Image 1 (cartoon, rainbow, N blue to C red):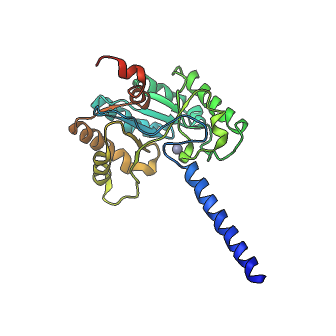
Image 2: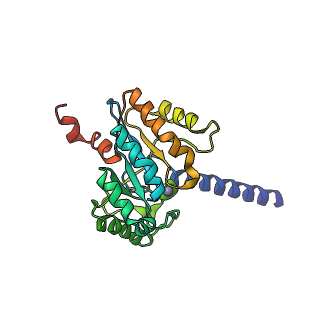
Image 3: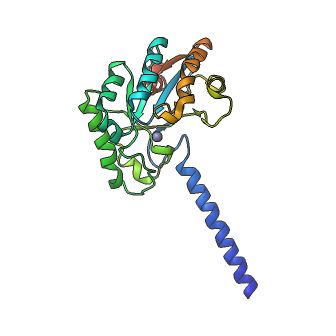
Length: 243
Ligand SMILES: [Zn+2]
């Protein structure tokens, strides 16, 4: 009897562990979310990739990134944190004036693990309002902090698509900016969405690597665009257009 109880208890614990692991994997899935549209890469044969920058905006981050993008004729999507954008609205104007896309990255950058949409409506809507009041278009894309999603998100997106990524190089990689850039350049494939974090002072490797990344991608023949421009390549109307 005692043995049987032990087996049942062991099996229950094992089952709970598997369920928790499965749930965690589902919440962090790159190309899937609970009831919400997601893009993580685009099916195309064209040599085109999207560049995306998360967090901020910060003055120093934009100082490091915007001139490099301009020098390479590249466009990108900046997923901004609403609270940081409220503190630095000029950053939004700088991004928009340079012709780049602004995406919504939540108001407070917390893990979005609530099952209730009400928890997130204001997080997302207020960030939209900050972007719009800086004169930029309302974001069409949402990127969840840490890429974590749960059932509460779908009802708060207000028509947005969740934009994940198919490549992010860990900054802890040894070898500095050159090694970081080489890894990004080698991993890019047609339709990739690349994620880089250049906004904070701790991210000097990313900032230093960015010109190398852009030069390397161009040398491989890639055009670099924002995420919405890449996603537009994946729709039926875009496919039926003569090009
Ligand atoms: Zn983030």
